[in-house]
Length: 234
Image 1 (cartoon, rainbow, N blue to C red):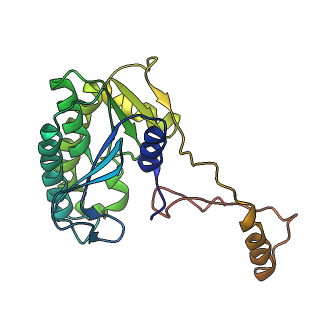
Image 2 (image 1 turned 60 degrees about the vertical axis):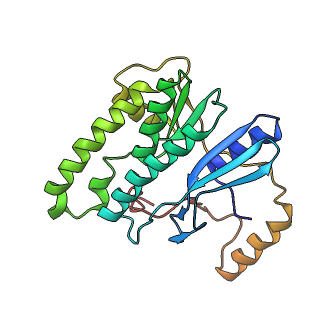
């Protein structure tokens, strides 16, 4: 009973429209830093929708060697679980990050001649230069060089690249070293058509509490605060 994100909403939509969905993920919750399950587990969410979770070590800090090891283990365990599924998929979609997972998805799809789609949501690995102190950049160069090689392999091997925006799509195409084709597309974040009418009163209460008038010029930001956003102009 959590708020579904990009892949969760897509998986539910596809399964609701009679498609068979096999979703592979990990036991570790990145946001809460807790384990969801204690061993490899498969949930039958409906007759045509399965969620496969592989048990992985996890990590305490987002930027750490433990996280890199975690992704390395995750990719190999997910690949092993994918290989154990008797019915091969008609198509595979994977988020670009973590790179280890997207690379094994492309490797698996090419071995079994299955079309694959890579979804670009973060500018890995270059984004690391923005979040890691400058004095550590010499060490970071090694990881970025390796990650760039993995990313290039992934993008070149994918049947299709999609991105949250034109810039994100262009980032993926840059590593694929090719121009955009008919299978590449920008797909913004979307949400189910909820009925928000019951929440309208909350806005009026907030306006009153912070002395805001409806005719004021109001800027709304939706997202996670991070170094990639520059609020100084605002």
